[in-house]
Image 1 (cartoon, chains in turn cyan, yellow):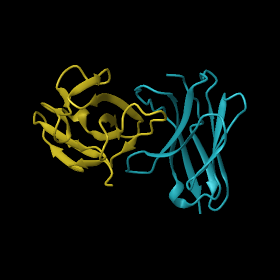
Image 2 (cartoon, each protein chain N blue to C red):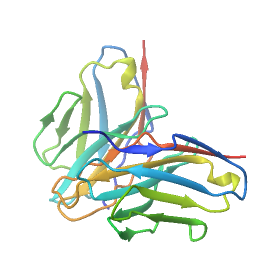
Image 3 (cartoon, helix red, strand yellow):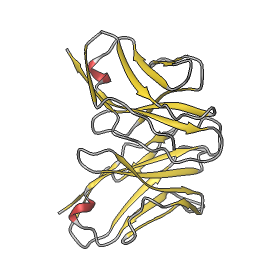
Length: 111
Length: 115
């Protein structure tokens, strides 16, 4: 699997936007970019994914660099419930694969 | 559509006993993954199964651990002769199969404590 690099931790204030970066310089042309998050004492949950174009859903937005070597998960207004570890993972298209979770980014949200 | 169901949510065992963790995937999902998360650490892949087949068990310890996903019923992760180092959260995830984008759906986890 191609490797991703994320900062260990980030901090934000409540109701402010949060930009969580992920570097994936060895991404292949058919790899999807997936984001998951894990709230304290819970299982990971899928957040969003994309291939080339920016994506929006009810949870977040995903901005993908033109060269696809990096991406940014955007939480438009952080809440205390967004405090979690955020994981960026590359998913080869088609076939079966085994998601590998790194250390992720621990997001701290201050009231 | 119920999510991934894991039970028990909490399990306490004494050293040397057996632990059985169960995972019922989402309806229509035929792929199951098991992960282990030690305290203050990340998720570590253990095993990947499809119905009646182990696809990849490269993350499973060589001894005492086994997994199955029978044609009928939940997937089972079995730990024999547990030791204190087995204390961890064990997460199960499921997916429909060889779909294009392949997001996983996780359960709430089973937390094993070995006394």
